[in-house]
Length: 409
Image (cartoon, rainbow, N blue to C red):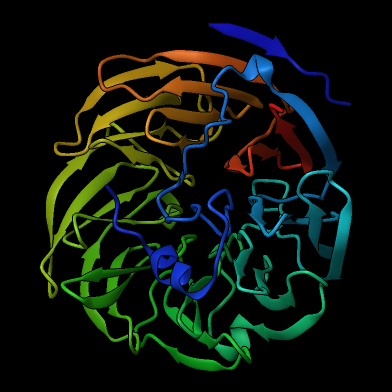
């Protein structure tokens, strides 16, 4: 196990599966929330080095307060941040050098409730467009290369979605010619114009999750987790097909569901526990529940029938990294010392974790035992934003907006 510090002043493709048909993305891109295949896993690369002692800082910067993860596509990296005063900014960097290609600022609410505040949602790249969502519900569609605003919409006006207690957190999901957002109900905007197309009828307590498009037996559905439960909608018009209660402490469901086994199963996790649901195309039924993994706001990942992720809540010393059997919900093993961190997968054998305190950790994906490969201090706390691996680089940020790009080359 290696420690070093750096100075610093078989998942069903979800929405990504349908989005991928629209644009020729490089295999190394991370074009939207949860990565290219929507499973929180970066494709393996011959150049990926699990030993973090061999990684160096390529560039760093500051983007302002917030929790928006980095999106990487076409040689550019995107994210959002707030200046702690009155403005939110969308940043576009050269992915290799960190040079600012363009940025766009606008007035937006900070909403610092029990945290510093700032944007929650991750940008989405589709073709030559970049779509973003502000903390207070402003949707922008940019020319991804130039930063020109192609259209703008407001979720509270166009889709009648009310501002949630902790702001909007639904990363844009592109399905065909529509952009989907979820916050108590699901709304679809026209990708070309931003005009509202439809919204689901029933309004539930808002959650802080991203909608998921998935297919079962050739039919497309949308899974949307809100503050009180999961709705499965007809992807054509938002008609509710099935509903299952799934509560979280403070109604703060904040993780994206996973569609598994050809859309026949849906995995949910919250700050109180996890549940696996069976979906027959019409109804939802519980297969198992578990308190072994509690993903409060950040998604786990699944490799070889095993779930890896952070079990715990912010501000609690008992948070741990866990391995859970996906067929039963029972823990294989658990390891303390990660805080309220985040995880992604690298290929089929490595987990990359970012601890709450800013340490990157590489871990061997194994059902048998915890196996730490290396550990590297890259940021100061607090880190609640998922790291990203794309283009043979690793991107990490903290809530203050300190952004670091690492390279092993």
